[in-house]
Length: 388
Length: 97
Image 1 (tube, rainbow over the protein chains, first blue to last red):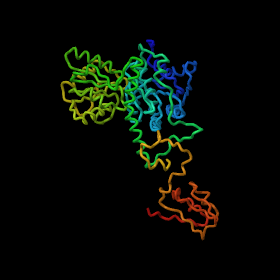
Image 2 (tube, each protein chain N blue to C red):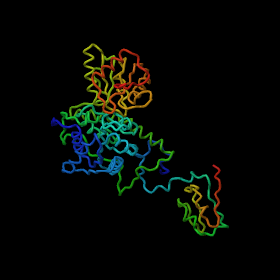
Image 3 (cartoon, rainbow over the protein chains, first blue to last red):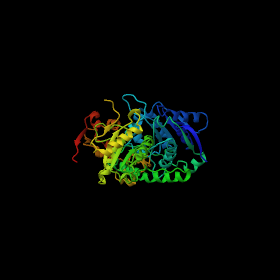
Image 4 (cartoon, rainbow over the protein chains, first blue to last red):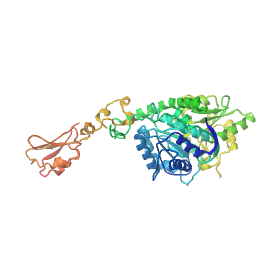
């Protein structure tokens, strides 16, 4: 049986990675990811986890080590944040192109400049097109559960793609929360050992990562795209099995009081709990408000998302990363496309909020909703909480 | 990329475009990159083998008469052989395609 423990979320994620019996951890410390890999390093040094811990000289090397060891058949883990992700990103595209089921937690942090160690989603949005499956956690329990779920999906022979589990830096990573930690036997029953389809083997030589000439590159991307689209069904199936085994069920899009809502707030990650408080407060005042929280960011759950918001007149979409002078932020752009394709004419307000660790309060959400319910949406996004 | 993968459907590609049949680089036709073709005048050639030594793609092989002949399946037309030939026996000829 799972034990409920009070634990820092980073430590709990480290424990979850240990429960997944990883063979290799290759990581470079960066705030706010540090506690996860520190804990894994301790677990290996103390003999609690039978794995190779490779203290690499950079994130670029971390992902390169992950690629090599996964290609050799190991279950591999890494984690990073912001600038570390930026340095690593070149290699992230290679992991997905080679179809290697690496799992990584990105502990979300703002990109410099100015230097900021605090939370927003600029690293996550930078990673959007790397071909990694991506989920984002709302709380500590989810961060643990989504990490275990990530290995289940990534290594499924129908998928074989790398998996990025996002979690907000500090707001989530450094909180002490009550978390049900699963037993090793429970995780073993959920997560079978990794069986690579093609691996590096001197007895049966293969070439990973050859040149793809113009006569094959398009076909290679097509094959990758089809596999990526098909992974959504496996993500959902693995959540169902997770629920059946652990009692906690997850969906690509979570809603809160959205059924009859005229105005729906759209969020990702840990701010969603603040938004839920705002929904409750506004409903007390008679406003029909709800929340749709995106948990699966890539592949984007288009149908599930549209079903969740199709009854709304107004949408309040939060973005936590800049898309300088674009039509809207990266999350809202996705949503506007979905609405346009389906002829839905919701009044869409796009707010940039919570940049570089700026708090987003219940009152902020209430102001956003009031604005959306009483005025026509401007064509452009609006950055909130800016001093004049 | 091996020739076999260059002409097949996306459905037939190996996972991650891995190559599972080692030693097949020779199957890749690099000859169609060529815009100029080296031709040897055997009246001038003294069989010194410099073309064979300098060719970066191992295009040249020795025939029964001792001349070095090109394999146009692999020759990229770089012209190094023509440049290095000490008796100017090799001429680069424009390809018509």
